[in-house]
Structure formats: C-alpha cells, structure tokens
Amino acid sequence: MSLHTEQSAVTVLGLGPMGRALAGAFLDAGLRTTVWNRTPGRDQELVARGAISARSAEEAAAASRLTVVCVVNYDAADTILRREAVTDALKGRAVVNLTADTPDRARDAAAWAAEHGVRYLDGAIMTPTPTIGTPAAVFIHSGPKDLYDEHQSVLEALGGTHTHLGEEIGRAAAYDIALLDIFWTSMAGYAHALAVARAEGITARELAPFAKGIGDILPPIFEGLAEEVDHGTFSGEGNPLTSAASSMTHIVHTSEAHGIDASVMRGAEGMARRAIGLGHGTDGFMRVTELLGRR
Ligand code: NDP
Image (tube, rainbow, N blue to C red):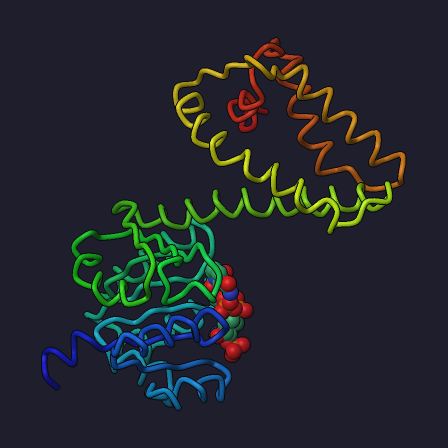
C-alpha cells in the first residue's frame, strides 16, 4: 500500500444517520473509506458509492490509520472498541470518537486507549446530518494536539469548521453538553410556550414569526453576558431579577390556569426567587449561574 493511500484512508464504525453522513462526506472527498455497522445492510448505499464494506469491526479497524467512531453512546462505542480483536487491530492507530456522551466517559475511554496503545481523540458534532460535507458543519475536538494535527486534513474532508479545544480529552464533550443544554432547555421552553399559546387559541404558525424575534434577541445577549459571567459581575441594569421573576410568575400562573405543567418555568422562577432571597434582587438573571452549584 502506498503512503498516499494509507494517509487518505479512513474507517467509519457506526452507520446510523450520522455515521452514514460522515462516511458519505469522506467518499465525496475521494478518501478510501471502509465502513462497518453492528446491523449489516446499512452500508448498501455507501458501497454503491465506493465504500469498502468490512466483515467485522476488527477488519474495518485494520484497514486505515484513522478510525472514526459514531454510535449512539459510549456504552455502544465501548462494546465495539473494547472487544479484544478490535483493540488489537487498533493498536498504534488513531481513533476519533465522534459519539456524544459525557466528559467523564471520554476521559475513561482515553485511559483505556492509553492502556492499550490506541491513539485517541474525542470529538463532537454540533450540527445535524444534512450539514455534513458542507460549510455549515461544526465539529469540535479535544485530545493530543500532535495527533489532531496528524489527522486534521482527513477530518476536514467532513467539511465545515473544525476546532481543537485543547489537550484535555473531556473538553469537547464538556462543550457539547453545555451547548446541548442550551438547545434542549430552549426546545422545552418552546414546547411549553406552544402549549400555553394553544390553550389561549394561538396556533404555532401564528406564533412562529414572533418566536423567531425572541430567538434573534439571544445571540447578542449570549455575547454580551459572557464577560459579565466570567468576571462575576451581574448587572441588572434594564432588567433586574425582581422584574424577571415577576414576568416568570405571570407565565406560571397563565400556564397553571390552563392545567398545563409549568415545571420548566417554575424551575427558572425558583432560581430567580432564590437569588432575590439572597439579596441579589437588583442583579441581572445571570446571577443564578453563581448560585446553581450551591446547596
Ligand atoms: P444513533 O444515535 O441512533 O446511533 C445509531 C448507531 O449506533 C447505529 O450505527 C447503531 O447500530 C449503533 N449502535 C447502537 N447501539 C449499539 C451497540 N450496543 N453496539 C454497537 N452499535 C450500536 O444515530 P446517529 O447516527 O444519528 O447518531 C450517532 C451519534 O452522533 C450520536 O452520539 C449522536 O448524538 C451524534 N449526533 C447526531 C446528530 C444527528 O443529527 N443525527 C447530530 C449531532 C450529533 P445498529 O444500526 O446496529 O443499531
């Protein structure tokens, strides 16, 4: 095998919607792509496009210097990688685990990899499958920088932006968790808002353009508050906690008057009231970041 072929070869373990998108992008970029999935048959379209179908995970791992893993969670990834034959095949090779899970699971996987001579990077994908292979894709990575540099060009075949966040292996998963926290609490808020709106005779379609307006307010707020939170100053100028809590109470009352569970909003209101009780009523809502971890 020529050096060129070796360097432009990649293996993808896991062919769910995301694994298939990753393998497809590698193929489009002209890389020799070997694929494997626990349930056979998921690789048919990829094989038609030129992928090599491995009969086993160990055969797939042995086919490339770099193996990308993308399965449902680390229990699944561990089941694949920690089987002796697969671990043996990966010895001295690189794994980039793009499976989502917790920072501690990434750290545990890195310890296992170090013990078995597997070169290990962790990563997370922050955008949905249609973005893969396009400029809109967002990938974050963490782990040894030299290993990242070595495989950066192959990873960049996935399109979009790739950011190495640092050597600490749990860092990409930590960013992923924080960012998904924003996403899922926002989705919970939107679902709740739609339920309250519907109870008041407003359709989701009617609300949508105004909901977008609220969404548009958020990015500058995120940027503006970053400095405050990092410096521990929580200015309530323009919207003190007392006013924010009052607005949240109106939402709780309207919601519960319709018999709609208001526990998500009650959680936020409770945080605000607690901060006020501790004497922070004139501060801004972000004061709660400081109090959340305190008992
Ligand atoms: P899933 O999260 O549903 O993962 C499906 C894959 O996991 C399949 O390959 C499946 O194999 C495999 N799998 C599940 N259990 C096991 C097991 N016990 N042993 C071996 N393999 C197993 O779908 P996605 O492909 O969408 O997601 C993969 C990862 O990408 C997840 O961590 C997800 O959070 C992340 N991600 C996905 C995004 C998306 O838009 N889909 C966006 C950003 C991140 P089988 O076919 O045999 O069941």
